[in-house]
Amino acid sequence: MQNESVNRMWKEYQKINPNTPKTYDAWAFGDSKEMADELAELVLEGTKTATASNYILYELENEELPYAGLLNIILDGEGNAVAIVETTSVEVVPFDEVTVEHAYLEGEGDRSLKYWRDVHEEFFKKELEGINHGFHNKIPVVCERFKVVYK
Image (cartoon, rainbow, N blue to C red; front, side, top):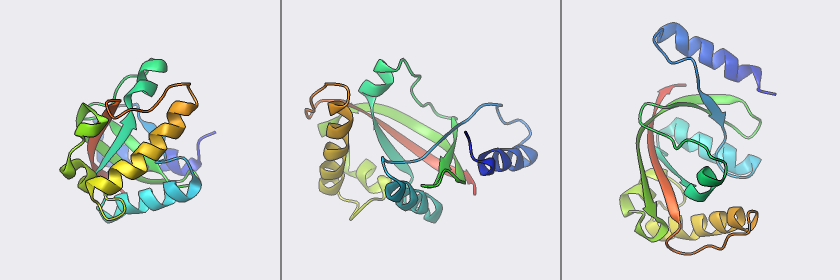
């Protein structure tokens, strides 16, 4: 069940943007309440303007990739709406070709590529274990950039 704050935020956004598409996704970053809270805060501060996800999961779930213009409601660890973001670009690249710039835009840790690789390798390994896939440096990664359009 979706938190009432999600519906409220979407209705508020639509009032000031009447030509907004009728659909959106609402989701939280990461795999824990703490991570969702921490990363949502980075979005609100303007530090986090990019994210990365495991392309293999999109394939297995037959899910559409994000695309420029897509609107998403970012949730905190309690499932409350904190911001609406618009995807500005999407690129699928091998894990070992994610750029220094993308790692910096993700806004996490010291914002270095080394930090990004360490954290995301661990995260992707957990995801891949759950679907009986192994991690390697060439797994495709969905690199998405976004901007906050409402908070």
